[in-house]
Structure formats: structure tokens, C-alpha cells
Image (cartoon, rainbow, N blue to C red; front, side):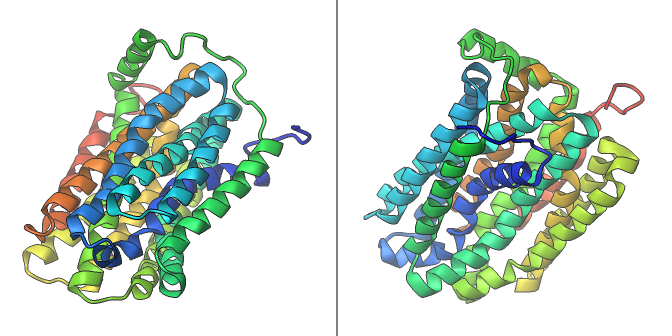
Length: 401
């Protein structure tokens, strides 16, 4: 069935893997504009509705820990195809949900399906590229991860306005099905060295332990996690502030998020222009400083009692600049030293990334009603943690970068 050569550095290969990564963010971003309306639709409260995001991030994080070893043991292709099938089923189940708890349960299935392609696609890239080439291809993955939360709320807001909240999940199911068919016909197996011991619990724990105590891996992964923790906190908290407190409609909310695209494109231009010249380590240092500035740009106005769309969108644009600068290099830096366990390393990287998002989302959904400044507070804390994470990474002169 694999009649054409699939390469990660080809246009088709990059587009396929980028879309696989985007599915996870699509499941969040397209849904976010509908959050306030679900309070009335399901006769519940905003905190319970926000749990639909928290459980998604949590399931996404934990099941990546299985997706990576599964792809090392059985191959990348079967894990990706199974994940895409689960994604389609989860999207359909969400669209048909008759209660908020049915929706929450269906989003767990949706997250499990999305995490397979998200985790394993990075291992596919590592299978067929390394070094600067890997970082360049990872930049497209970073683009999907950044542009998805920037663009999908716009699409979701319009679908909600014209057809209702279920329309976003129908859209996800269609995209997932198309990607499944394409991958079934075109995606080859890239794991040429399957590890029969990859799924043994003792071996998995030892491998994860080896990665966690490696300063190179943990520093890059922690920085990646801090930035995505800020992003997911923003996705969970901004609908309440912009639509409930400030009165913007779902369509208007989606259009406001378009400002974030300019932020990401700026970061991506910086990466493409200077990434090869100054290297991975220096790129993540720059990105961590920008994320710190973004954190305090949201924190300080909130402490002064200034709440407006500009005070929310402006710092989020800076965050997307930091994401465009940092994420491609941090992903490549975390994975480049572990080609023999690329699937496991990619899964752990994704777990730390989504795990911080789950924690941030849970804090927002639990405290936002009683503590309105919780999102700006999280932004500031995560910005500081990002800078600290970079300090853990050995300098290129002391250890290979």
C-alpha cells in the first residue's frame, strides 16, 4: 500500500506530521469559544465546563507515556493509525454528548487519539533526520503547535456562531478521517530498530529515569513545559475573562485570538533567520527571556487593577513570540542525544509539556471564580520557571549541544 517514498523533509511529509500534531490543539482551540455557552446548555457551572479542558490535557499527557514505548516496540505506523481512529471516534462521541459528564468522558477518548500522532510524529522526524535538519523540521511542528491555538479558536468561533458548539467536533472528525486515510495509504514504517523490551515496566521506568536525570533533556523539556503551561492556562482562563467578564461574543473572541498569529510569526521568523547561526542553546535562552517578559506583562497590569482585552491579548502575543523562538529548538535539543530511544524521549517530552498544561488548566478551573487574578499569577510564575530551566542546560562548551 506504500507506493510512494515518504520523507519527513518533503512537503507531503512535513504537512502530514504537522497536521498530526495540530489535531491535539485543534481539539482544544476550536472548542474554547464554546465554553461559556455550555454553562447554559448543560445547566452547569463554568468550573465544571473548564474541566473538559483539564481532563483533555491530563489524558493527553499520561497516554503519551505509553504511545512512545508502543511505537518503539511495535513501530510508528500502527500507533499513529490507531490513534487517528480513536480521534475520529472521540470527536463523534463529543458531538453526540447529552450531558456535561458524557462530554468530559468523550474528550478523554479524543485526547488519547490525538496524543498518539503528537508524540510519535516527533519520533518519526528523529528516525529520518538529526541535528540542524531535525530542528528545521521541528520548526514546522512548532508552527502547528503555535498556530493551532491561534487560528483554531477563530474557526471554532465561526462554526459555533453559525451551527452550534457540536459543529467543531464534526469538523475534527472529518479532518481526522481524511488524515487516517492518507496515512494508511502513504505513511511507511520509519522505526527500523524495534525494541522488544520497550514495553517492559522495569525497562520503561529505567529509560524514563535516565532521561529525567539528564540535564540536557530535562532543561529543554522543562522550558518547553513552562511555555506550554502558560499557553494552556491562557486557553482555559481567557474565555472567562474575555467573553464572560468583558462581554465578547464567541465570534469576536476567535477574531481577537488572530492577534496571536502575528506574535508566533515574529518568533518563527527569528528562528528561521538566526537559528542555524547562533545554535539551539542560544535560541532557547532568548526565548526564555521573552516568555519571562510576557509573564510579567500580564501580571503587572492585573495587580494594578487594569483588565482589558489589550492587557490579555498583548502578553499572549509576546508568549507566542517566545513559543516561535523556543519550541523548535527545545524539542530538537531534548531529543537529539537519544536516537536509540526517540519514541520514549518524545513521549516524555510531550508528557512534561502537556502535564504542565493540565496543572495550569486545573488551577484555573478550580480558582478563577474565587481568585480572578490566578491566570496572571500563573503567567509570572511560569515565566520565572522557564528562565530557571535554561540554567539547568549545560553550556555548549561544557557539553555537546
